[in-house]
Amino acid sequence: MLYLLTSNDDRKTSSRNTMWTLRTQHPCIIYVNFRSEQHVRNGGSHVWLDSAAWTLQTNMTSATSSGIPNGPYTGPVFSKRFAAGAINLPGSDNWEGTYFVFIELLATASLASSIAAQTPPTRSVEQPSPPASSPETSSDSSSPNTTIAGVARVEA
Image (spheres, helix red, strand yellow):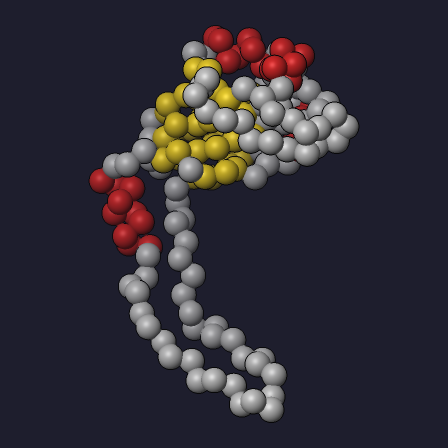
């Protein structure tokens, strides 16, 4: 499961407007985690959740945030399955903040190929120990980073 880091300043986006557009290359399930039941009702999110057939996940535990001014917060989690492509997420229109977004990529042959193509082969490198009299200041800049690119992109 992936967490989508978003700007809390977007909390002012009307629930009638798109707050974020995700563009995915793979089918996925999007989970939106609200801060409280009141967070869903006060900003009008219940309207788009109902009209777009989002499912309340009663078996999932909410993320807990320590937010100001009324935290800690825990609230309901809703989910919806999407095909690859553009996914519009409406605003929450709530001064207490935006909802949290989690993405579950669904296993497909193309996802497995994408990950395999971007994961460097495992290698073992022996690093010499630094001399006892000098601090360790070197770094291995040739070490590859494993990045799963091209899975999803967010547009505000």
